[in-house]
Image 1 (cartoon, rainbow over the protein chains, first blue to last red):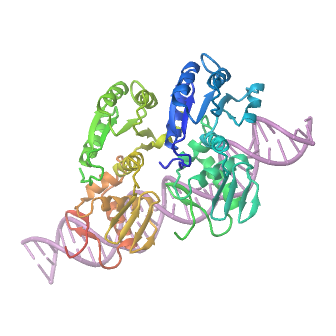
Image 2: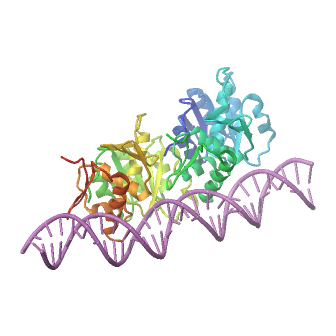
Length: 236
Length: 236
DNA sequence: GGGAAAGCTGAAGACTGGCTGAGAGGCGGG
DNA sequence: CCCGCCTCTCAGCCAGTCTTCAGCTTTCCC
């Protein structure tokens, strides 16, 4: 099943998470997305893995059996390393510590997250911290433009307002333009991993998207009956 | 049992399934399709078989007597092995767990499936995960082209619309070009294994296919009275 | 040539996948 | 506390698809 494109090929990630299911979910999909992934299941293991591997970015659960994520971060950075971090936190952890994170170039994602959400954050942080590149956060396909930073979307130069889920869905389609995506894949990537509804919600959101960005020719979102959806220029 | 071509020659599969009838069906036909097949009938047996054999891909029933498929997957992957998996699930497994199956390049097929369907998925997953190959998903025969990913079919460069079943039938014919296929074989491979209709449906679909892709010379789909059908260039 | 078996195909009806309108429920801002 | 947006579910609908059936043609054999 065609996964995520691999725009960040070979960036090295260290994923730190004690729940084995979530760890498996993360490492499998981030590897498939083209990252070079190492894992750790405790704070202390994370610290030594970080020392050894010098990852480009760390995905770090705040709640760990031994040290908490902030401790781990402090220890990793003793000695001046400036490895960027994306934290995973519980939804209600309105902790002040979390607040300050985006100041230092880091970021956080609340559980339960969607893979789309997480990989978008990872990409954004890497973009910001890697070199001083202009670092475009703009995706384009045909006359569609999507700005990952501002969440603005244009079709044919015309601004379109999308809800958060519509935005994530469109981003996923654009990242995987010309690739056929099944409803299951879309559900797995765009919706939170604890979503337990059925496929029909994908149809609904495809319908919303079409109404907002694909109501006239040339149509870009195509249905392949029994297979999935694909974002593609027609007449190919 | 029908002659599937062996495009993935010698890839090693581990098939895990507790129903002996289905296991037999699977192992026989996958072997005949050119795979090197090992089997296991329980989760724990699967884990040790995986360790020992290091298969290229695992076909894994979700419902097993001891561990469930997800447990098995997690245990297999402890230690960093990245063996891809094609899951077998019940059709109505709407509830929980099934989510996340398309991550990491894996895929799943719902029971009752057709062998065509399953082997197509297996091939697709192997294609995606094996090396960084260009990974063509395109079959061609004479001036017929069939794209397994997008389900697009061309005859002489001309796009043709096929229904899902027509598509599966044509793919089966193309994979077995120049090989004579009996109606029984076609039924066994292209239709779900629980189909209880009669042979005439194959005639119907051959008729549909001819109308769509074989209405003018040179004819490619030939009837061998009393024997079966074959996809072949004439004058041979 | 005639009969029988095999194959072909049009038509009919049931079924399915996908699309969308309506609306319930949640959350957040005013 | 009310309102509006958003998410998600549900149910109806439609088009396309599957399956069966019956009558027809072709082929084969005597």
